[in-house]
Length: 177
Image 1 (spheres, rainbow, N blue to C red):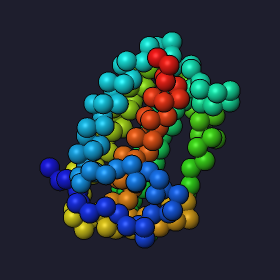
Image 2: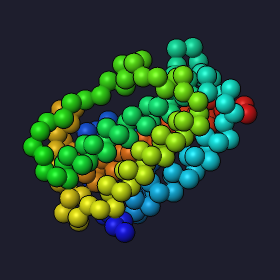
Image 3: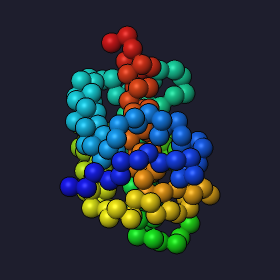
Image 4: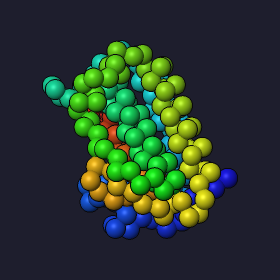
């Protein structure tokens, strides 16, 4: 099984905005981080009562289900970008307007059990992709949302983005629980 790369992406490998997610991943092997996140995240979702799926921490904020859906959608997009760049696809990839995606999704109406299944499937797919990359593929670059990224940076973004939103769920949605 490939563990990817040992060195963290440097600032030339991603847009500055994404540094906040990459900084949340301090471990040496990003593939191992993603593997361990799967079990921990699913455990957290199991602990959430089904009635908590509609909880918002403030008016106008996403529900718990919508946050989980956003994490799923973002991982899909970042993994697709990683696949495209790993295969040296020269196409420039579009951005993702998260609020529009959330508004037009059905995540808010899905049971947490189905969201757990979907998150697991998406993460397993991401792991399969990353485990099978050649060492050279990790440093390949491409353009998405008008910015240049490496495959390595995208893997770190996936892991850090999940950590960011799990922290928000734990501290803002379930702090009193």
